[in-house]
Image (cartoon, rainbow, N blue to C red; front, top):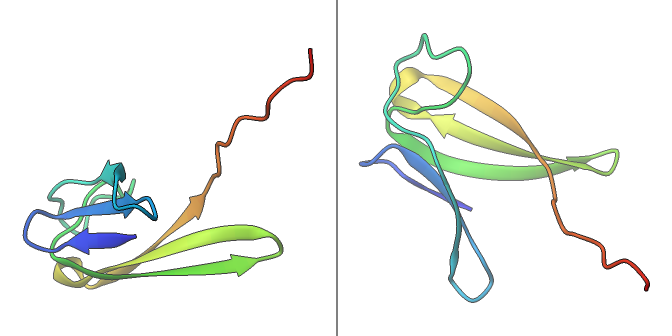
Amino acid sequence: WGVDGEKNFLFCLSPKGKLLLKYGRFATWDDLEGKGFSRPSGVAITKVNSKEYLYVCDAGNKRLLKYKIINKKRKKRAK
């Protein structure tokens, strides 16, 4: 996980460096849905009761955003 503070987005890379997710746009502090950032400056991941959360420091808007990480791995069905 990382952030691009100049382009105002969050991204996730695979262990091999492939872009898996790009999220966000420019937004001001009144973006109540948390879909954008203003100069994001860092990320942290924490696990609580088997649930993972991603925290994003939104420096330009002077706030910390919390997102629940949902793992969408598909299980193979037995035939």
